[in-house]
Length: 91
Image (tube, rainbow, N blue to C red):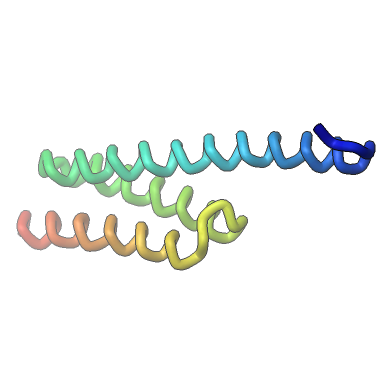
């Protein structure tokens, strides 16, 4: 329980930010799973669309520090490797 009005405001802000960050992280994880699923099904058109959407969300979260920038880079790299491997296997 906060003892001052400013501490109360900080608590409300942190709760609101935490909720927003958790939603953002969940959306990113879901989009990564969709991309990897499309890659495993060898559906390259859908995989490319999912890949672009996932990378955009990861970039945004990394720049806003919802994710650590190195974590964002690692996740993008993971998706890019999977997508490139599927593309190379296709051709």
